[in-house]
Length: 234
Image (cartoon, rainbow, N blue to C red; front, side, top):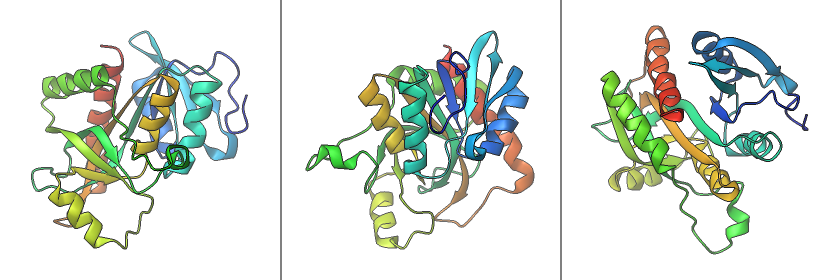
């Protein structure tokens, strides 16, 4: 076990899906995995391991924001041997063609800062997805008929944003959506030689103010999880 993960050796799979919300981790594990078992509940951050079509999979919460995700991803890779990490989460749309309920596959993630920012000093490191995961996820989404977009996203440090000018410039430069974790996930995967991807469901839209109704969230999030699992084992 580690400081933040109470799993025993061998209880974490090499493939890990990372929702921010620990209760969404429980929902996804119970819905998509065979024989899921709780392997972590330290500080209320739930992690479950089971199988999907015979493949071992862990679904583990990452918390909200890059500092929280950084703690769990560091430990999952360094101490438990995770090799493929896929963020499954919600995001806010920033382009008119990106609709609520659509899926976004993050090719790269811009940010003002990440927990890893200090080590790069003057360099603006550009964290990017694993191409094979990205291509497999895109193919899975097309096969399911889910409206999907692939491109750059923005990982924000804050939920209650006070920089409308920055959002305007990001939108102007084609950024598809905003969320709070992917830039650090991609940076850590690059550092440790792991594979990473973010598969995101658009739950609200910064331009239109539209939001996904609560009754529709489960169906939309199910598409995202299925795409992530297909991508991991293609």
